[in-house]
Length: 278
Image (tube, rainbow, N blue to C red; front, side, top):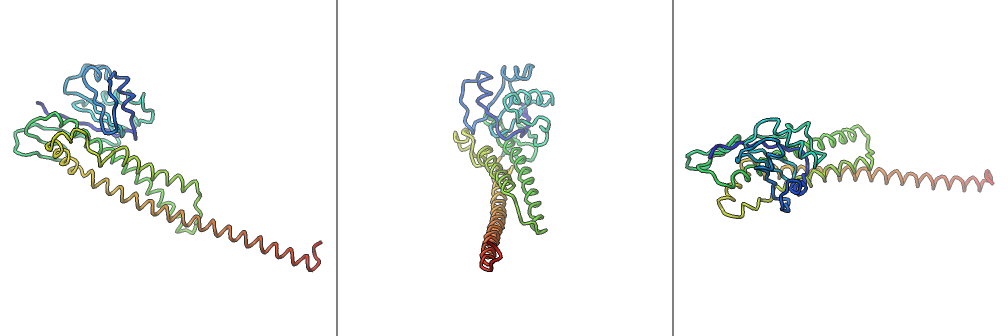
């Protein structure tokens, strides 16, 4: 068995695998945790060229795509344009923004060897391509989510700067938009990428499960998820503070209006008593 190369892209937040499967004539209902694996004649038709048996593409519902033993930029572009017909939000222009390369090497070695760029195994197993693809697909999707979280932090920093300058009023729409971004970020991480969920194949044997656990630990998927979750909780706390300040200001404004109206009524009554008003 020859070495295998992997190229992962995170290009959108969600991909409907079932629409693509139907178009490709694949009679299977895909769930969230299952990747759509395209190879053979189906992949050849999409790319418009003959492909080898070892070449395949795995499409994940959380917006990542992994190319195995495909290396030409035009092949990536052709396939992404095909997926774009199903998912208009797919970002082809910035396809190289969130990407990663990895390799599987088959060598005579006593134990599994993991590095940032490749993994070395003593012999090939059928589950290696799917599990490696799943890990690096989640990794690039997390990278995309981490950057989006950074943008939310920048937005909140701007709002904090306004508070420091004494501009205490924050509109409901602004609060709602920022909160929606935080909720969307958390939903994309937890529901779409499914960091804490394992592929069905890992339940087939302890060996498969151990390999997946080693890969996820090396790529620090769980640790990165926990950091994102912690940062998200902090964002919620900050938004609660903004909301409390905003509501307090509105409450104070209403109270002053009531006081002014009462004073106005008292003033009118006094003027009437004094006979200055009819």
